[in-house]
Length: 299
Image 1 (tube, one colour):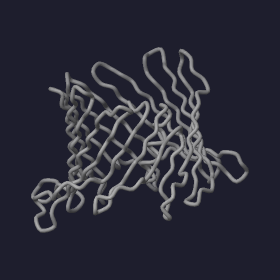
Image 2: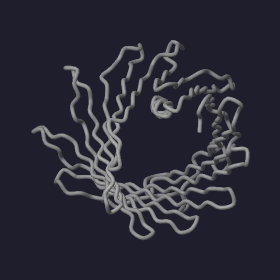
Image 3: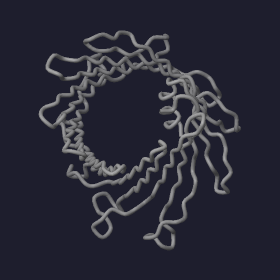
Image 4: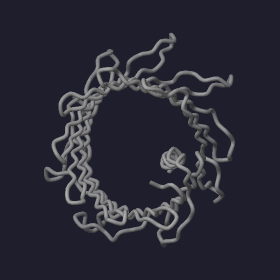
């Protein structure tokens, strides 16, 4: 829930307020979080709204060559006391050949009131023909003060008409200093007739470092003329890593997200269906889990 509130806070700069309500087993609603003006609050154990974090963002430089953005995240503990801040600096640079370089540095606040570099990632995106390739290198500080390359990621995006395929491979350094393929995400998107279908399969390295299917999701989004939309997401899992039941992933959950416009903004509801205990092949009745009410600039 704290992660969801973080995402809400980052979206709050468009002069909007989002209130998220959660529902208990009896269908009673309770205010869970509020996000407005870069500040996110969450319901504490005693039922009161307590600040979760505050996000401040500003553009340090923007010209024809690119843009530098600084974001300061100030977290709070459950009692509302401020914690060490985090600073993220994003430097976007455009090259003459059309490629885009993004340098992201993450700094953690220290006891002296300053910031220490915690991570640096460098992403380069190039487009050739109908394919766009993004290569990312992630570095973290070592004990001697230098930076060590620990993770690499390569994503290839291809388009053919209304169909789009994204293939991402993640490489991590092992204890011997060698890189191995640790994960893969294959995403296929097809949009036609007012409906968008997204099929995402994730793979992880097993004991022998062979990629094995870990999960899959299929999302169908239908948009209507009035701006409202329905998104249905089916989430599949494995009985054991790389070993689907009957040769196929097993349906674990079905989510239905309804988003509609209101006079003041939007309302988004989330309902969930899970397989019945006595019949794993049949989904139970939908249960309303949460509702987001956004007022102001919500699109």
